[in-house]
Image 1: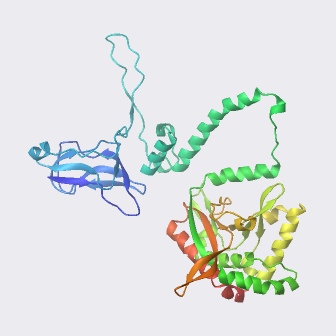
Image 2: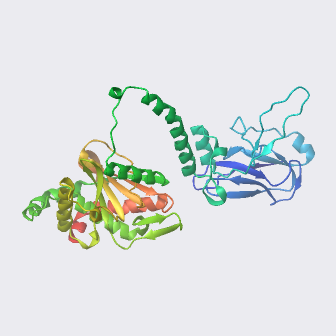
Image 3: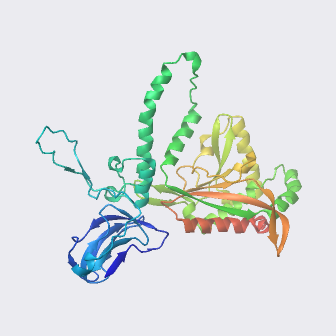
Amino acid sequence: MKELKFVDVGEGITEGHVQKFLVQDGQQVKEDQPVVQVETDKAVVSVPAPVSGTIKFNVKEGADVHVGDTIAFFGTPEELKSAVSQPVPQAVQKPSTPIIAEAPIQKPQQQAAPPVQQVAEILAAPSVRKLARDMKVDITKVKGTGPQGRITETDLRAYAASAVHEMVKPMEKAHEQHGEEEVEHVPMSQVRKAIARNMELAHTIPFAVHMDLIDATRLWDIVAREKPKAEKLGVKLTFTPFILKAVIQALKENPRFNASYDKERQEIIVKKYYNIGFAAEADDGLRVIVVKDADKKSMIDVGKEMQELRKKLEDKSISIEEMNDTSFTITNIGSLGGGFLSVPVINYPDVAILGIHMIREVPVVKDGKIVIGRQLPISITFDHRVVDGAEAVRFGNAIKAYLEDPEFLEMMG
């Protein structure tokens, strides 16, 4: 007797969803004949029989299986009589797909129950199904926007958000019952409304985050050394011009991060220019100031331009053109102090954003000895539709390599 197990298919996939049986339980099958469809996070695969013989399924359609779980047994009818059922971790099997939903039963005595109603097939990856269970969302009510109506994580979260909004409505009505002296109505400024719209758009991006630590000892030293020279030129030198130059070089080596995603056309728009945005705090909300064609400017020029943009932001003389058309964005969380690592929100429609955190003195190992160094934590939030984790690691490694060799960046201007 032979077992068919759900095996490790690679790429970190540990769970599958038994979507459909391709043969009947107890049917005679041939070796390599597809017998069951299993859906993973990456694809739907048809699993073949390892041997010829009679098949006995150990799971039901709609069940979730993990690596090592037995899906079916193969052998002679006599051998299968002694096959010991091996339970799958899920104690309660999910309804098969297509899902059969029973209509409410309302019957007098001796009246048959109403016939069952067949519902359309639910297409969703196991991770999305698990998320639906964790969020206590009825996945059959979610409308999928993926290929063939597949339900994505974004669809699920959007449905959950709308459900929460419906739940909040009675609470809002309850608030209205209180006297005006008990509440304060704060109108949102146009800037705040724009920020809210941008955050809502950013929420639609399926993102992931890559984090790393950079040895900023040499960067700290070179900025401290060059600061007096820059001041003579009217520039307050910070780490930002070095970070900008490192990012540009890394973007040239990893161009998909200097891009945007066109959802309607399902195209990646790779930009040949480098308009680097910087998140900047203003008294009426967060803004993004943009250094246009930053690759064509020296560090001193970048420093001067950023000073001018920040001044315009403070006195409210900044133009719309000086705050839009980014190709990549940087947010300097470290300038505010506190915090170790964070997950910045992507500046829509950019593909990614780099978070720079506070440089701290830490013990580091150098040439086999523990010495005091300076460490810069970074985080890269990226659009997983456009780039994958391995690409984010390479992009982060490129930024790290340039920032750990600031003399080279200085030579580049």
